[in-house]
Length: 247
Image 1 (cartoon, rainbow, N blue to C red):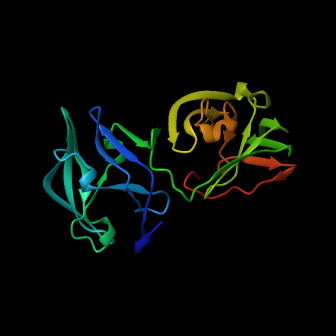
Image 2: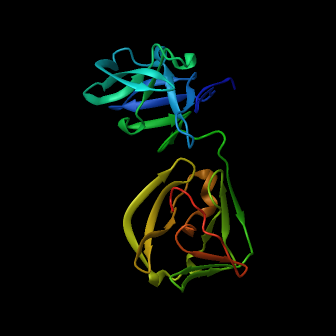
Image 3: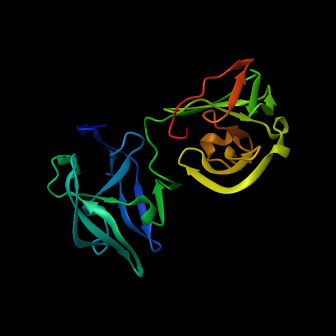
């Protein structure tokens, strides 16, 4: 793929067909989207203006400035009776030439996003992020405030680019009596929708994917714990607590 960069912003083309929906209609539909890394963690999509519904964008008169992308023109997005105020940006005179003539939609302001014919959540999938799920016979024990809450020799280890290894354990190896379900729900573009439990009175220390996305189906129904917030022993050795945005 062709790549351009300015400061910490990187731009690449993608061959995927990408669609953004609002009000039950595709307001943008393209096979020439750009992946733009505005932050280091994941990209966002920029659509060629030619592949956006002509009546969908209305400039508000407001602008916003980015040191790397330049002066952004703010637009409201409309589709039938649906309206998403201030939900799109264009950079007609951007110093980053590749994004001129393109529009960026606020992800959460749209009703749905599709890569080809598969719906995607939270943000575009990063082509440089990989998820590997491997079975392990290593002895994994999870301890919270000195109490063993899980003990297994049948875990699966999930390796995701840029994150610590996560140990997913069968529920039969977890002290479910110490877990209390919370109302927290999160979404991941690689794994799906997660539900959460408090553990021994500490909120949202454990999670599980009941029906993960196909590429992560090997963790279906298994329980994982935040390495950052509790003690995990692997073959009797205490693992160092990693420092991440979840710490």
